[in-house]
Length: 113
Image (spheres, one colour):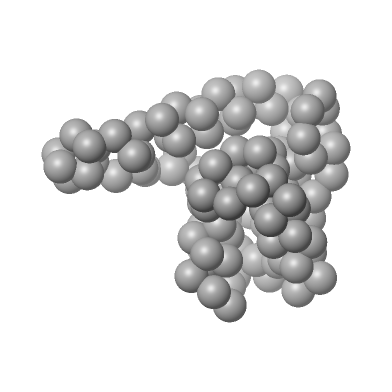
């Protein structure tokens, strides 16, 4: 498993699930590449994906994916009522983390999970 796989799996787990376009931004890859990563994770049993609402498909981790990351979270697809919230929170994280002051201040993302 590559460093990109590990980073993507951890990011996905911390966010409950992500849409493919946001996963691509986080990993600095094309959306096609993110789709291929998600497909590989599904083949390995680490993730599931589906179109849960408008826009791109969502990706979330299975029990095996969460165990591979060493995380105790309960596996479940993102709740339909929370999709807009999850997308907005992911957008905020994607905007904050690359900001120069974020790392300089010792900031880090703490998942609500």
